[in-house]
Amino acid sequence: MDRAEALKVLQESRVAIDKIDEELIYLIEKRTSLAKDIASAKIALGIPIEDKKREDFIQDKIRNISKQKKIDGDFINKIMKILMDLNKKEQEKILRRETNG
Image (tube, rainbow, N blue to C red):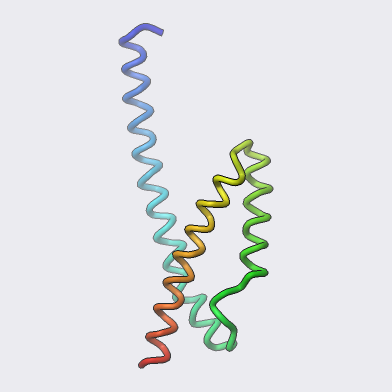
């Protein structure tokens, strides 16, 4: 690969990564917006925000998908933990609003 080709590949790859980053942000926003529905359902069912069984299921599912895709499962699970924490935070805000009027 010569210099001109390398620069072209670098630029195209960066543009593609920027587009993927935007898609990831959109998906995170969409995932987080479901917290309202989940919180409302949990309030109606009288169950706590924290659901260790569900979190364990998600972690196992992600570990299996990561293995299939040959991606570092521990790293992906850390990302999922951050996303689950974000959802729980949103659910807790909604729960506080519901209980405080």
